[in-house]
Length: 232
Image (cartoon, rainbow, N blue to C red; front, top):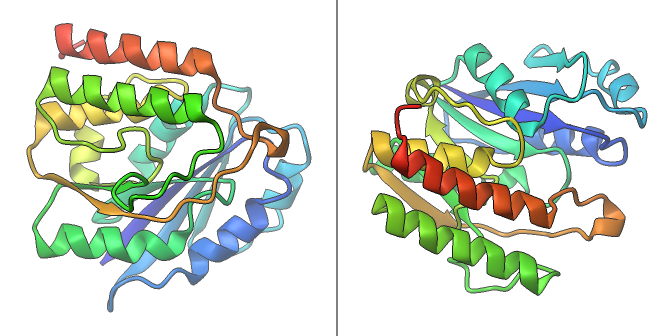
């Protein structure tokens, strides 16, 4: 059995090698292995040069010809995934791969199609910025209202999805809206979705955090669009 890990990278020279090391060392369930697909979104800070030093046999590296957006990187990687389940992983160190096991175990024990790693279920307030936390909570509420779901953290990076289902979603996202597009499409495709609490170590904008307020506006539009035009 295999877990596919998609890592999207853009200008993460300070963290990418440590992140790959953490992914490789993450303990899965007995009998499970990993394949790692790294998509670099045309980094300009030396990240690409570091990626070229990775020689692990289970790592595949895609170098985008130009900056096509995070969502596009996800869509580029999905057809290459051969594992039973696929999980997305940011290239910074906010999310720790040691938590893969929790999501995978939940999916297998309850025969689920998707498991989210929720930063809310733990009861802790991880966000440095109150506005970021508020926007995520509001977008989660709107997603639940529009799609009849029970998400607590729709914007989490840790989305473990059955690979065959993920490939069938026909995603069209290009940027940070991918979290919401995937959540919307999953809600329309299956009810077998659950969550587990995870730890989260946020970074600040000075440390390279890339999400911006305009991404929240875009996400709100995506929620409305996918509800009104679910097959487009």
